[in-house]
Length: 533
Image (cartoon, rainbow, N blue to C red; front, side, top):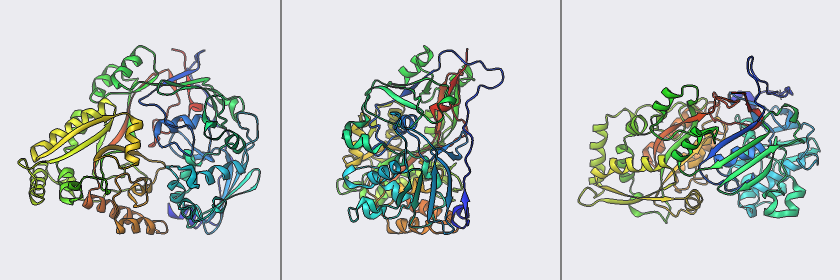
């Protein structure tokens, strides 16, 4: 994979025909082309520079389109970029943009990408995803984010209205994979500069995607309508897309069964029954996300978690197999690494606690706690914070039960998603439920999270780990570096890794076009259609 972009003299992705959505043989389109899907929580932001969650990304993929998009298998295909070329040294990419309009009829230009990326890097924007430009290795991104250089020094230039040039600091084999992420989407400079933060409100927001924002009742529903200005509008069949917020997963399932929702997550433990009763609707496929309990190792974190022996004991004694096989029961995999097992080219390190019998792990955990001065007579006391969802609650209760016999007392603290993420961002927690979903199909999308200056909500830091990620940027063979990085995480335990996700859903069989082979489960409403039932 390294050689694909770094050593090729000239790389050109040729323009591809539009992916025209067509019913399969024997299918008849329904008259009502509407798709209604479930949201657990309110979408925090529709600003590409400020979104941080999966639900927001799903919405933004309807409203905007980046240089590249993904097909049903997760492969990169042209979006706004009709073609691109890479220089021989792999440091310069030139993108030729297709002719397209914003939803207000104005043309989309290369400058809209330049403005958007510079805005992400600008400290005043306070983008929580500014680090993503560093991960892409965009020239001068690090210095601009640190306030040491001006935004106009970012390595992205509009050569003309339809030609965008991007300069990297080092050859980056996964660079093209990063370009379907919402952080890289263009935004309309004139609209943003005129309206400020209000530009994302209904009636104001202007996008270049297949849909426009019809309404957004925060925490209730969000509605999209087909955008007639979209460059491939003639091949978009789904007219209306609705996201409906239901905080209780079991209530959401009931609403699915009543015909109010077309897609909903299956509650923990119910997949075996539902897959037997509704084999055409119940679906479980690997999903590139990892679930963990993050330790707050910052100055604001509890002193007890600064002791590596306590963290190791907690990691050892969590019975992941019981969580996966008896609580979740949806095809998830136990996690002994942060990187998802199915990520392209990744191999988890051999050995470690995953190869220890549970009895031996519990014995070692007891020894470690005793060495640290803790046990049933002098318990460790920690608060575990999680956001509202019945599955998170069930897992937190299970973890509480696993740790209690060792003398680890867990206080459960359930808060709403917005509060949860704000507290994580500000290190106002002791231990917190968290999940990270891959932004692209390569191991750095996970490993960079724990970099000292990465997203890293617990503020763990390790010099060797940081250096491995720097070295991986130019390495011919990244596998041993990534493996060693995971070994360090296993040695230091900045978090307890719990399980690797599967997407476990009830999907109305009348809805076609949702991907089943894309590890990131990246879906585009423009690819969907409803057949007559």
